[in-house]
Amino acid sequence: MDKTSPASSDCSLTQTVATPPAPEPGWRRATGVPSLAEVHSSVRMPHIASFWRRLLAFTGPGLMVAVGYMDPGNWATDLAGGARFGYTLVSVILISNFMAILLQHLSLKLGIVTGRDLAQACRDHYTRPVGFALWVLCEVAIAACDLAEVIGSAIALNLLFRIPLVFGVGITALDVMIVLFMQHKGFRVLECLVTVLIVTIGACFAVELVYARPDLGAFVANLVPRTEIVTNPAMLYIAIGILGATVMPHNLYLHSSIVQTRAFERTHAGKAMAIKYATIDSTVALLIAFFINAAILVLSAAAFHGTEHEDVADIGDAYALLAPVLGAPLASTLFAVALLASGQNSTLTGTLAGQIVMEGFLNIRLRPWVRRLITRLIAIVPAVIVAGLYGERGVGELLILSQVILSLQLSFAVVPLVLFTGQRAKMGAFTNPLWLASAAWFITMVIAGLNAYLLYETIHAWTSG
Image (cartoon, rainbow, N blue to C red; front, side, top):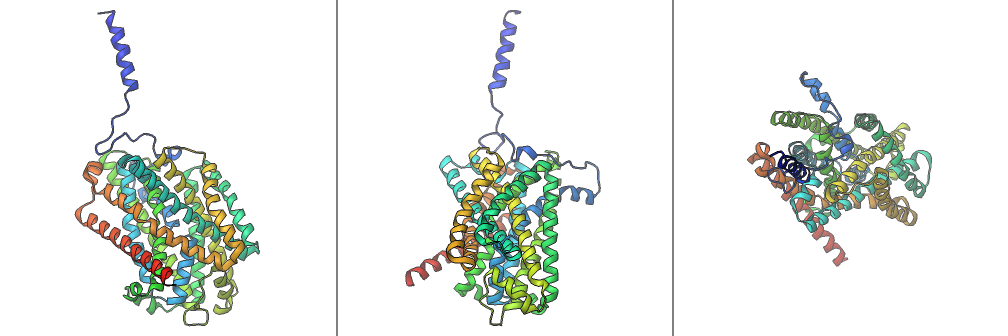
């Protein structure tokens, strides 16, 4: 007995070490390394506290996600929509915002319940070729988003300091150092910086609207959508650009990861509590994003629609015309300051999204500065070429095109998200109820249908032209 016991003990120990953790129900493998492992569960939660203290503890991820809904890509589409069609497309911004609120709720719920971000869930659920294809599509979307950030920041630097666009694009490659510095200081510090920049953007546009004196009656009336939005190809193109700029595919990956920075209890009660407060955080933040996006379109409609400047779709032209049209010299400066804050804010969240997607889909972990530099170079090359060949007008058109690309990629992120959160094997008691699943699939079909229609109209225009 004594001779065999050590052997049995050694064998038992060896078997315990070699056996991988058992996968959770509904998944093929165990969770593994958590998303954004360096900041996972790093924000402490008060166990016994009032509603407001708990909400404050969960406040942050929603604001970081909302950044993607007010990035420079929104500016180009909102400016073009307001100048050409007045207040008509306000309803598109509102509908897109409601879609975003629902989809971001599903995203945060997936992360909280399963402990996986959307990229990790796709890698676990799908075969390797399908997962790789989804990763490529997501990288295309991130590159398009980063292109908007690069162009927006470069335009703002040009407007404020007269730095040539080509050099401004190059300067944006250096903002990776800002991200690295803030990540080193802690995730809460990063969230605070994002909040300050959002407040700056909001304050600038609040002053702009005072100068513009918009027609509030027309604004309210156009919160109800009109059929001409779909029947007018030019309006539909801008509308889908707004959709792509509002509901951003990489934000679904981002949100499912950063909600896991909160150190809530991984029990049923703890997850339910986390979903509740994270949803409030997300909803309020996205409503703030709606008002900022609407402010951009309303400002453009009030200043340019019905005038000889209706063809304004370029950020640089809008900057030059705002002061003389509104009769307020400060208007143009505030516009450029808000644009720069928007570009830098999007840089912060774009960095995290790129890291999450690469780690989640490929299980590859690069140094953050390497990942960011790769993403930036992908965006900088086309921006430099267009800026050098076509100047501000070409850069503005490229900005709108980047948002349409984002919209075309959206279904490839939305379908897996709605599918996973509707499967009881994966979500257990937190599976989407029937009303939520129905609404989510309806939104998915609307997005896919609009994108298919846009693609048809674009091909038809090319072949007939």
